[in-house]
Amino acid sequence: MQSFFFRTIFILITLVVSNDLAFASGSYSTGGGGGDANQAYNLGKSAVYKKLACSSCPLAGQEIDATKATEIIQSLANNPELAEKLSEVEREAVTVYLKRRYELD
Image (cartoon, rainbow, N blue to C red; front, side, top):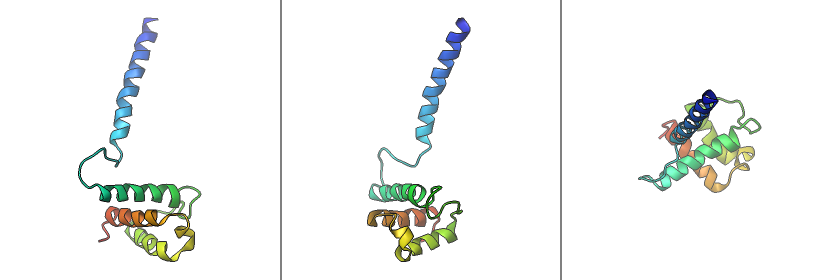
């Protein structure tokens, strides 16, 4: 019985600590500078991985590097399959994300 109690306490402590670590690993911010630029970056990152590069998305299974990021930015204006997946705001945010992430400017 005592072993069960200590095991349960250990599991609860582990869950509480790992929950905080999981939130610390993201790129979302709770404040600070950057404002609109950080929001555009985060929206673009989310759109890339949820709407363009997911397992059933147009870029599924493709490795994104600087060259591919440049192609994606150009395709957002020319490729209807990519353009229809995103709103105008998301297309702009994807461009912000890819340019900053792959240091294209």
